[in-house]
Image (cartoon, rainbow, N blue to C red; front, top):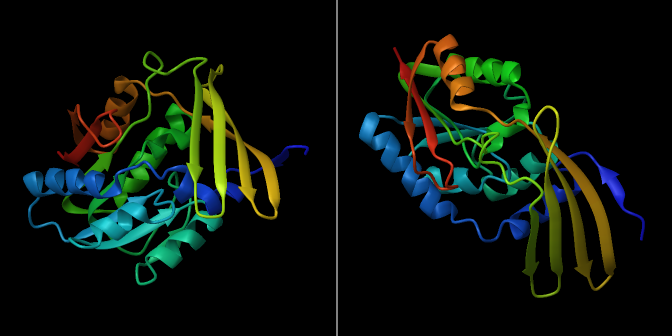
Length: 239
């Protein structure tokens, strides 16, 4: 079967939860809650940027009034089935504008890498900062830096359901502007086996890139070296 080229998180949205079946969303949400309670115990509202299929929103809704934003209509469709009562917004993290502010704005699971460039990183953080209520917190879990990125590493993930099987594989490539994951997916059901490909182009940002972006947005930056994904957590607070 010839691979079908698709935009990111279109066909993949339907298999996303199976693809990432190994992620501990409950544990990750507990970590985020602890970070928030330690710095702003009175926080009541939270906006998740790049909320995907809503797995973190479902967990965080137990403690906060949550909303989500994502660029992919297909991912938002999955999220609406998981958290039907949560307000979800379609938009680009670089230049979104909602009609309210939040005590916490967060971008988890290293999704910030999808902004691609340092300029777009600054614009995204400025957009997030605009949506913070006075004294609010901005939490961003980063992707790899240029030095820590796994260059030319082959990754294979698999999942088997009751009547389906999934395998997805990519090589971590470095490009002139960042990183590329050319993800090959095999999805098997009783109807047959489908093969499709998604190209994910990602930014590789340094701590200095984040320092400049947070400073330009008027935020004081601290770095927590641990995080659910193992890459640490950038925490921005008003100066």
